[in-house]
Length: 462
Image (cartoon, rainbow, N blue to C red; front, top):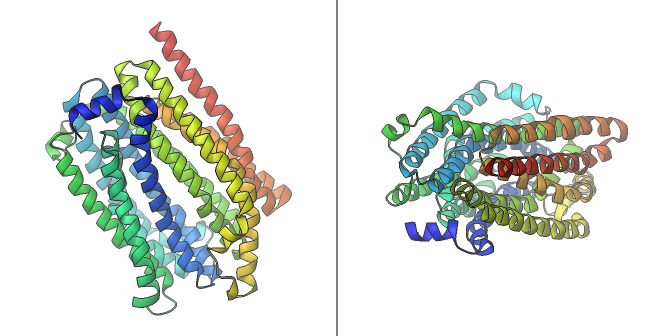
């Protein structure tokens, strides 16, 4: 994509078309990567062993922390790069990109080492039992301890490429890893490794696919640097001004905390679910994977929206910025409405994809619980999107404090307390119901914050 093409994309292309250009490749990569994450659960479910499924549910929290750490430099750096491009400060954007890459490498290595040191303590804290801890340990060692660096770096590079206008290249890199994992999963789980090592096979397949994805994105990033405000030079990273570092972290830290709090909520969900038994934990684990399908589409819409909003915010084109926000909101709510309809109707067969019910009564009971939980939790999809959409808009405008406030209130004031309260009052049904109720209150608060930010900016402009 030439400089002229990027300028047209951000400044003059019809908003719906520009949003589709940025969002569609991102949505595709989100879905493919979601599929490959779900493939692990699908093939492990074919064993009919709910304890393996429960173990991968536990480790999902540790794996998802990779997303939080990649957001620190990927979303923080990417959002700033888009705003610097809109302001015409190309050299500063290059410095920020290099700083983001090396920062992500440093934090990924730190996370891997700490996970290795505190492995068993973490797993038992997350709800592991004697029947699940061995499986969880094997998966976490390969995917988190060994695999966090390529996973975090891949996502960071993807964010930086997308915000520089290279959405297709960014999406191809992540999608490549997903497609390779889909092929490698059954190979390692059922062919190369002996029976009983299905969790280890899934972990090895995930590691290899992440490494290949990282290598591809790194090569693409280096090639794009000749015509985009991207750099890998350590000297550029060291020249990043304090003001830009501050702006990067002003968005990156709240974005990381947002995902971190989301993971904390999942930790609480796992702990409360495991208190009801491994069957309930496995059923909730299935639901947490299925409900990510509409979330993946909606996050793809928001990620495609962010660079356009950020660029026009910095360039001063408020009308285009607002139109982009409105268009993305309509698309996301439409996706949410369709997802509720489909998941309510097909909850049982969809849940059954992740557990071989011929494995016995425990497997059939796991699917039954999963279907029930799914019908309750899928109602949250529209208000979840409002939360994502509002948060991404505030990140695009560099409003880190508002983003962080929203994250804290959404998870710590509404969702997590409701989880404990409703679980105590109504058991596992109440636990599942906490999501739609908590997300509703979070969405109301998010809209108040977003419109407050927009009104304040317009008042200052006037």
